[in-house]
Amino acid sequence: MPKTSGGAAAALKTATKPSLRALAKRPSGPRSPAAVSRRMRQIEDKRSVILAAALGLFSRYGLHGTSVDQVAARADVSKSNLLYYFANKEELYVSVLRDLLAVWLEPLRGFSAEQDPREAIAAYIRRKLVISRDQPDASRLFCLEMIQGAPLLRDELGRELRDLVDRKSEVVRAWVAAGKLAPVDPHHLIFALWAITQHYADFAVQVQAITGRTLAEPAFFEETVDNVQRIVLQGISAS
Amino acid sequence: MPKTSGGAAAALKTATKPSLRALAKRPSGPRSPAAVSRRMRQIEDKRSVILAAALGLFSRYGLHGTSVDQVAARADVSKSNLLYYFANKEELYVSVLRDLLAVWLEPLRGFSAEQDPREAIAAYIRRKLVISRDQPDASRLFCLEMIQGAPLLRDELGRELRDLVDRKSEVVRAWVAAGKLAPVDPHHLIFALWAITQHYADFAVQVQAITGRTLAEPAFFEETVDNVQRIVLQGISAS
DNA sequence: GTCTATAATTGGATAGAC
DNA sequence: GTCTATCCAATTATAGAC
Image 1 (cartoon, rainbow over the protein chains, first blue to last red):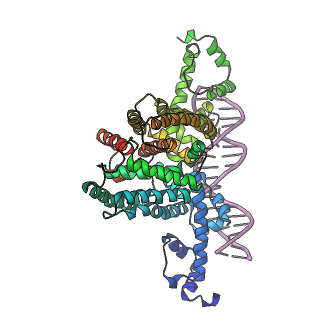
Image 2 (image 1 turned 180 degrees about the horizontal axis):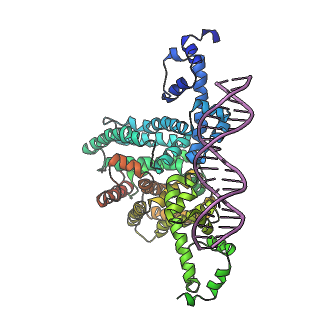
Image 3 (image 1 turned 30 degrees about the vertical axis):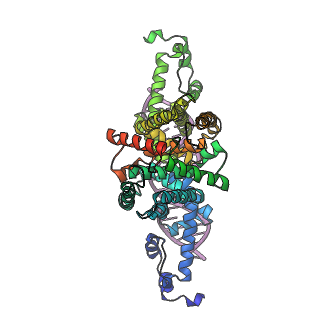
């Protein structure tokens, strides 16, 4: 296997910092099979391990509350080795954030005017709560970044997020126009959906302090899905 | 006036660090009129200025993202002077947090079983949104602290918050039992109310990026109150 | 009470050997 | 690619004069 590493790997071998920096900037999407040499796999794997460790710490203690040393320790690499893969602390932080936005926006893409709104929204609530259960770190870091004014996501917020929300707002408007939904402002509806579902990740400590339970418990998870769906869809007025 | 400062002030004059430390620990509630000498007023005033400055910075950048120097600069005192009033950075931070919990819990106390649930909840939503509009810093810092696992509020969460929520949950249960409210779990309802109303403070940047508006605009504020009330009370299903 | 040093520590980042 | 050693900047906190 090592012998099969061809031109790409050889080229990478001579290249040191500069090419690695270029690599670092590429978003971690799927790559063309030809480019996936064994060496590049190792590099990507290590980057992933570091990114995962960084997410766990940044999401709890923030950028300034986390030291490079701590991330390195959790990823089981040395500090200087980490700084070989990421030029500096901020680049590491931004790399983590970048991967986040995709996860965050994904569920909303599902909405389309042909769907039944009640089913679509019920499904959306469940999907978001699954994320709050399985990826609370991602949710928390996103929240942290927002609270701080999202200095590093501001540009993307202005574009990607806004575009998506605008498109989905049209879907909601169409539902309302067709009489399939009570008259509600699309923006406020989307905010409500985001807020309630994220709450169970961001305020997990509070939820646990009050109820004594977490989404990790299947029974509590289902109970939560059911209640959130009912509140948003039916409201709480007596029928 | 200075001459009227009697025994209490004189006692304070000789006492230096120790007594000031003791003073620092006292929660900033109303004090007996006799104890409010002119000197103590000055001390309390200065503490308040520092606390306000600290809230503004901690709520944006967190404990570690804020330096004592920055707080001092914003409060218009020197760093060492600040450290005369607060033993260290953490004591300052905890002092800010302490004042917060009261603000945070206040609106919920209003609930009582005799009220009409729809009116009570509508009023609650408005009150919380007023806080999100007028005291977004408080909301954000509270959120920051929760995300980090509330290491400094954990104890109080376990008691004060839990007790209050338990009592108000009984009120909600009574409303449901009386058929005045659709069957909903009190905890999830309270979480939903908290989440949606806080969202406009904590995610203000996102709200602004998407809608181009803020709660500071009276029209947008009223529109928000109206939509949140409708979503929670009526739900979004077509009637 | 307030200020001017200054001590003491942490933590990000680099240099250079291997 | 990885490590050790080290530099350097930023900050917390204290000492001590006024």
